[in-house]
Length: 204
Ligand SMILES: *[C@@H]1O[C@H](CO)[C@@H](O)[C@H](O)[C@H]1NC(C)=O
Image (spheres, helix red, strand yellow):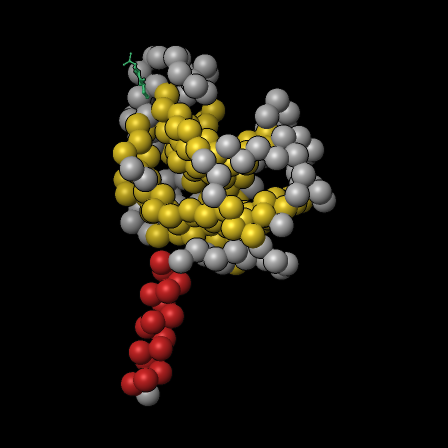
């Protein structure tokens, strides 16, 4: 009994520390580099992304032309085909605003795609259209792991929350890259502080 408990504890620790790919097939780990985008008062410190309550009025800087609050990593993993998986663990540490996008599969020059939003009641949702992905799972102080799988050959996109597939849509064709952090959507308001403690990427 004691040995069994120790084994269970060890596997729980391993799960908390290491991100793993979900879904079928053989995944190859990749390590794309990234640039950072901070707009209108958004800031990044290590793996913590913070937006203040209101934009500061500045539209200068990369990705800042619409004046929205932004604090994001823009990964340089641009792709038009293949199968691409992202995993990341986040914890919202404060949230007085609402409706902030925390992860994007950005479609360069094409139709808007895909923004994972969070409400201040902890719901994860698709910013485009508003469909709920998982209810009340990302409340302040709760650690959440997200995996996304984008099959750019079959034009499918799936979102996993804490290892379970919760949402699936079709994707447009285009040239995509990954972003995460915090970004004020059209309907969103600051402030928020979110810690993305770990992330990983795979392809197949
Ligand atoms: C607004 O914040 C951005 C960073 O998010 C900064 O680069 C810019 O200088 C700030 N502008 C003003 C007017 O404070």
